[in-house]
Image (cartoon, rainbow, N blue to C red; front, side, top):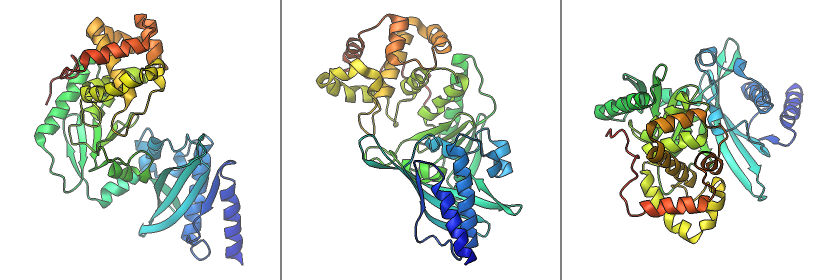
Length: 383
C-alpha cells in the first residue's frame, strides 16, 4: 500500500512539471517495486522543473563537472530548456553500471501548423554521489564507454574514438588555422580548445546525449558540428581539421557580434557541410531566379534543404562584400561596432545604403555563378 501511495504522489508531481506539458511514464517503467526508478524520476522531475522555470540547477550535477565547466549542462546545446513542450515522456530507465542510471526521455510539441514534432529523445545520466543522485554529462559517459583517446596539441585537445586513426598533418593544420584566426584579428583565444569527433551527425548528437535530435538525420550529408562557446568545446562529425567549427572560435573573440558577422565569416572561410560556399551559392542560384521574391525578406529565408543553409550563404556574401570594399580593417571595425541583433537587411541599409536586397543578392549571385570561388573564401590558404 505504501508503494502505491508513493507512485501516486510521484505522478501528481510529474503532472505539475509544467502547466502546458503532459509529463508521463511509459507503462513499462517499474515504479512499484523499483526504489531506484522512483528516486531517479523524482530527481529528474526536480531538475527539469528548475530549468524549465529559468532557474539554475548546478547543485544537481556532479561537483567535478559543475565546478570545472562554465556551462555545466550540455543539454543546453539542444535548446532543451527554451522550448515549450506538450509531452515529456520517460520511455525507460536502465542501469549501465552499479551506480549509474540512464533515463531515456522523449520531448515533443505541437507546432503552429498543428503537427506534432518530436524534438528529441534524450538520454540523461545520473550517478550515485554521497548517498544522493547527481547528473553527469552524457558526453563524458559515452567517451568513457567508447574508450576515447586524448591527443594534446599546441592549441587543441583532441578526443578521438578508439579506432580512429588521426592524421598528425591535419592536427598541425588545425593548429595553424587557429593561429591564423588569432593573427588576423589580433586577439588570442584563452587556453586550449577541446575537440571531440564522432563518425556521423547522428552519432555526434548521440554522444552529447540525444539518441534522436530533430534535423540530424540527412540523406545528403554526414557532416555537422557543434561549438560550445562557454566551454570552448567543439564536437564534429568532420575530421580533425574541420574548418567550419574551428572558425566558430570567432564566437569567443567577439561574443557580442551579431550572428550575421560570426556565421558569415565562418561560412565564407570554412564552408558549410564540408562544401565551400561557392558550391552552395551555385546550388541556390537557379531557385532564386525562379523565386526572387524570397530575397525581399532575406532574413526569413532560412531553409532550402538539409545540406544548404541559405542564411549562411547570404551572410557569407555580405562578408565577402565587406572585404572587397573595405578590406580587413573595415571588417574588424564592423564586427566590433555592429549591433548584436543586426539583420542582413538592416546591416546593408545602415552601412552601405543598400535597400534593394533582391537586386543586391541577384547581382552578387550572377557575378559568381560561373566562377570557381569567391575572392576571400580561402583567405588563410591552409590545407
